[in-house]
Image (cartoon, rainbow over all chains, first blue to last red):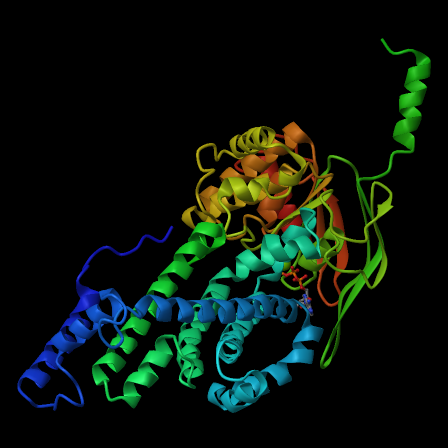
Length: 263
Length: 261
Ligand SMILES: Nc1ncnc2c1ncn2[C@@H]1O[C@H](COP(=O)(O)OP(=O)(O)OP(=O)(O)O)[C@@H](O)[C@H]1O
Ligand SMILES: [Mg+2]
């Protein structure tokens, strides 16, 4: 079993620490003017106001919960849609060469289209708001999930299927008993990449003028020149992205033996 | 005491008894981009129940292919394979393979690997008992909770053996199962196999490129040739069991076999 490496617990925090110190130095010495990069203390204060202050006591005060839950819901729905399409299609195309040939050209061409160019189309189709964002998130997360699942499914050792067949496991049961666990490491990297991209496209979707959400806050703050709130928004997204990645990883390891034992 | 009638009945039953395995004019061609390869041609082979037969021959002569055809992993080009009179059409738990390579499921523990083929037929208690019994049988009593990557090559092949024995197959197909092991482990495994075979009396087809392994194990040795793969010789091993590798008779037979090939 892979045990987490518990040596050097401070190692991951060295680079953030240095960056923070440099930031302090830059703003305190006046090297970078305040209107480009405010002091970390002010960012922290804005962040605290944003998260903890009672609503309407100041601009942006207490809006965190509404924004975060709106964004979380959009990411969750978009990502789930991508999983529901990406994993079955990936399994099918990875297992059946015919389906792989049928789909690969189409999917690889679509994949080459930068996600941002779907935005105008999505706006026309779905209007501003929830559905556009979900569409963009699902669209972006689908490709890494599909491609990794298909690659994982294709590279399952054929001996495993033969061993399964002699132990009475047919094609359908083989998908659950052999293919999915054997391809689990690749499926997990697909899911994690997909979730990461989901957050990126969430912001893209929310930049278009929805009234709440973390992307909306960033855009709104730029409009009225609150650079501190832009940075607060960025940090919140980074933290939530990281937490969701950890949660995804942990829950997969709890739910699937193969996830725990093979990664 | 048996009455004459019973004797006749058992006698006639034995007379109509189907061989464990009957292969008749079996052939296999692999088609490739630049032509085709006659891997197996005109293979005829009959193996009776409880026999331990070794198949040997140069690399690429089609031993693994023959085994996979018997297992039902692929379709023959021509001819038939019958197990107890029934034609093989697809894989099944009556013909189990211990593979040349490590084919344990890496996401399952040793015990779960062994349980894999029977778990849907048994309750939890019975399953645990069975798995423990087979773990014990292959000498892995306390290793049930280990993952395949945490145990040695010899232990992996013990697990591979246990997970097919638990299915109680009619025919056990073994493809150079000990080929990758060191000399000492290999000898342990040969002894294990022989003692299991004496206890359970399976029909075993055992592929090996090591003639002395074949002489140690086999009732009969089948020698194959390459291009196309054919049976060159079918030799009964006259040595009594248990066989001693150091004995004169063993050496004489081994040398004689060598010189004939
Ligand atoms: N699926 C396949 N498609 C095409 N050719 C194959 C296939 N499987 C095996 N062959 C070829 O058939 C021949 C026989 O292969 P096989 O694996 O049966 O040999 P073998 O006797 O088991 O050899 P070894 O002792 O090295 O294991 C080889 O030349 C091999 O390259
Ligand atoms: Mg082989």
